[in-house]
Length: 308
Image (cartoon, rainbow, N blue to C red; front, top):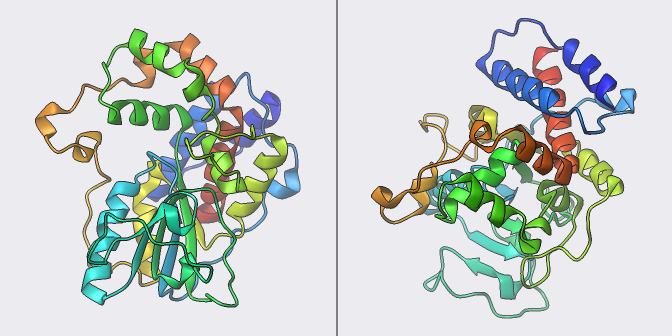
């Protein structure tokens, strides 16, 4: 409930030295301000549960790539590393199955893999999946690090809209957002992390519930690590710490929307939270309250860990 959320946030108003914690605090404050219509954490013991430490090293990665959470930048970096280190790289859409996956370093990277009953996606070194979480057999793949990135739900939606190169007007965005096809993608971050799979059209037959939210929150504690786009530097630092990215690598932020298009001059103007207005933002938050809770929970845990 709102009171619990405000108590959580008020307890975090303390000076943090790192830019990482400043970014996390800003996200927590923002979500807290916007969440007057949303439920929040009710299990206080869960709020302070420790996140697992990073492994010393990892030889492979499994990136649960929620759309529009900074993945394009990482995929470019992983591809560069895969070429330099002669590592295999798999890219999957919707499902981790041969017909939905491509070997990006094969001679025909644009073709999907042929059906194979012995197929195990995690036999590849780098696995990037626009698909719901699939359990990783740590006995068979002990050196593979699974991770994901979350983002402010409304900004993620705005980024996706910008990516589609649609008119940057509130009326156009509102019409697009209120279409049934788009509404079926509500709470997509919760769906991805709780393992809810999409159909062949990319829609979710199962509408995520509070039970799925609990599964998604639990998964944050079982992944190798997770990040928030608002604190992208921490994601890069984690990947460097486990040896997936070179320590000397310098990256300026994440890919801007126009970098997804061939011609940057054609990049559309962008809408932001302020331009949407309070009424529409509240509508989106209500539709995506599981994701709002998940992101706020993730930011709180991360900030609590880094300030501890």
